[in-house]
Length: 613
Image 1 (cartoon, rainbow, N blue to C red):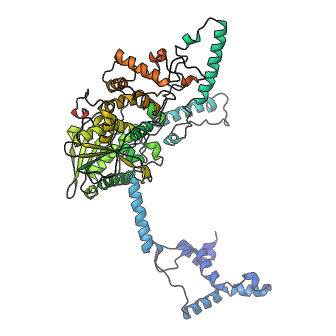
Image 2: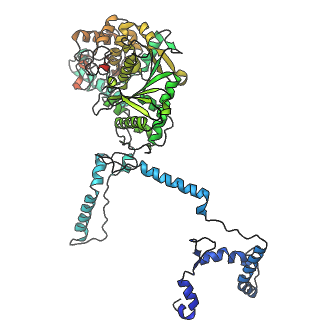
Image 3: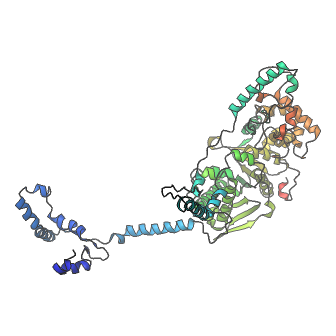
């Protein structure tokens, strides 16, 4: 090749002018290498069945066959042209309609992906946010990612000073990796511990009573006097061994009231109707989650309107919870798995919905972010025809807005009368029911929560419209007439249900171990004195001594007769006076069972009039 200019100048010239590539079609920009072209033309045309080995073993014949290969291929190509069996050159693949459509779709996908990213130049971010997913970095991740260059520079200088620029350099020394926390590590699974503490309670009880018996034998100790005091930091009748609340099945109270009531189920509701929905309960019913938040908002609005149309309601209220930083329900939400979840900011309707949807909606901040986006999407981006003539009221944060469909847009009006700072949607739903009762004769409250039913029975004392409670799914779905329940219970017990429900165990107060919602109501309803005490429980922050005495009597009645002998676990023993005074100040006491979950239909400390019924 170095002598090519002298020996073969013509070949050298063609190589310099890209002779090594050529085109096999009429269109340009499709040159291929020469050896590839030879394989696709000359060699292919001269091939025979079985290859060179299958022709002959005669060396001379083989040489003649190779030398005549070019002529033979040319003759074969001419024969194909004469027979009209040659290949018809086709257009470029990139110009096919299917390829053009595929390329356009790819460009659209790229645009959508970029639009789904968080725009760092439009929003004022106080936190470090992932551009693609909208996840908010934890303090540890934000610290490592913002200081990565400084930490890397420091690590490099330390290595050079200690391993290279030193009296005894070590060129084989390993460079230590700087383990920085990133967004990917925020998705690491964390194993949660069992919070029930059943095994621990059994072991502790055996050791405790064994030690007490040994002490009683060697000292003058009266066990009757000892058991008047709490034996551990968390009394087991009111708490688990690790300090958690004792839980009870709240739905049993609803079933018991239904069994005591006749003709309370209805199939048809007359009059102008309003449907009130619990927002979080509706979100929990979505089985197939759309891929983007925009599609989720569209699907949810269609679901809400469809529920209203099925019940022939002219108005539907979509009521949401509030999630303040400090809340009495923090403990309950921690048990439900809220802590440890990732916080995600929603900036675009094209933003992808997290794959771990259940985990996403366990965090209060994520729920508030989602509700903000739903309100913005419904009021600004949705098609007015989706409302189908139904007025939509959405209660979000401390505000409430009314959405009404116009010709080409959706009108959004703030409803100041329904502004409310209540944290729970349970009470806000009844505030909406009170407001709607001025114009509508029938109000349907749809919720799976027993708490809402209890509050609705209490609120029916001051709401003139007919209240209905829809609960259950599939074949267990039913509509309960609150008016019928109130008639069967009477006004006194209708007012006392909230205090009774809070005292015997709810989300924020501990239940009595082994005393569920089935046995406690039967005992309480035997005495009108108990009903009066529960109806007034929560009206004052400090429980009066007279009411405290009645509640003590009820607890004693709940646990059975005096001087009863038998074998009992520590959890099944009744709480004592020491539990009432708060063992080590860590447990809920009778004095502490105040208005945490109590809904007062008469008095309210809030400035907003909608909180009064």
